[in-house]
Image 1: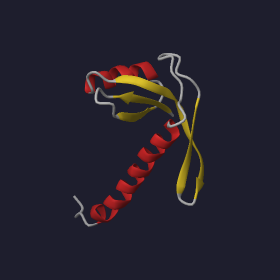
Image 2: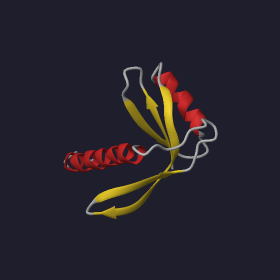
Image 3: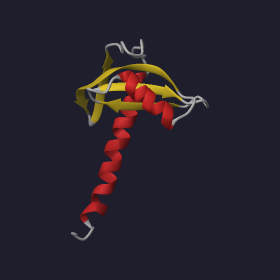
Length: 103
């Protein structure tokens, strides 16, 4: 899976994921419309390499030719936080979804 990390004007960094055929540059251009003034600071590829003690170990690798950017050391941790928050949100919502009446 591809990823791009943008930095907003205030300094906050946000990770975003995409799948081919979207290029890193195309994703970056879409994000520039959603977050005016943001700049891409890292890009590459990410994969889940192992699960240990219910914690994912993500590996960043490769290079974005369209942005001329690669991964940074901190990227795997930032993407891992996004992954855990997404899983935690899904687990939190599961009981509420089960209690909804069928349409």
